[in-house]
Image 1 (cartoon, rainbow, N blue to C red):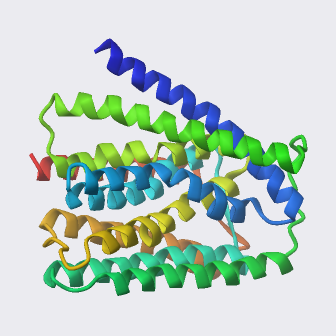
Image 2: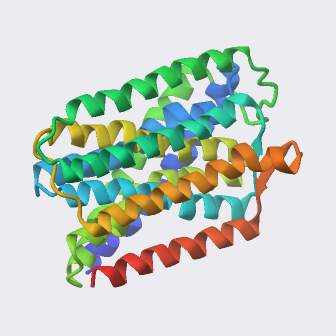
Image 3: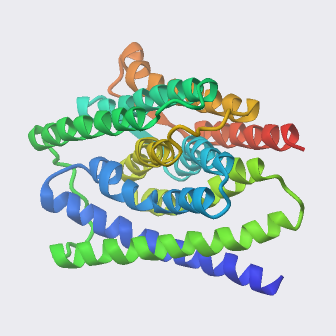
Length: 328
């Protein structure tokens, strides 16, 4: 038991240290290249913080041969990002969403890839012998086309809201970013190891471990980065990281499952199908608020307040309780 607690405590410490390094380096890189912290979070930081999800998926597919855990990890992680992490971040520091086309488009791509992934999952669940490689290529292609267009838009957009944080050289910024990602990776890894051992001792099923425990554990980098960014009044970086991570989970990790399990995709369980629908609904409501809620209210930006954060946390608690009761 002491060893398990050591893994958990050590993991949390490494997560906090790594997140602070990432936030500092990301803000400096954004200032150096004259791009928004949101874009840096959506691309570079989100890619790094999605490494635990990737590692957990590869382990689930190769070691225990469990597609349920792999899919549950993606679904649960995306729900945790939108409800748990955005909830915590908005409680610490209210989040303001700009009506700039770039940020609105970045939220839209989250919804687009989620809807496509839901359709693919439903199709393959009823056609297990279909070749899924082509479907995975479609997902990845859509993402890279969007990313290219988004980068071009960043270059022509005025990014005058530079941070007051100390400036580092490019070398130091990249070094801090790499070291921070390493700390995040191993911190989340040891936290997951300790938490899984604890959960297994209570005879919790594989699917619930994937939807909740593994999903929460692999979302720890986003949570740590989001908290540190919010404390430093850099909520745009936090939001970019969260939304970018959701996209990477689908176009990268879900596509990986499609590549590795082509022609042998298992029939989807009712629990997984229900959860992916819940994930899609949550994503739709969130994106609708950001893209259209602002326009309908005729205000410059939409803000997630502390009350919104509390509501998100309550919804996440209900979601977790639902899965626990459904599978036990």
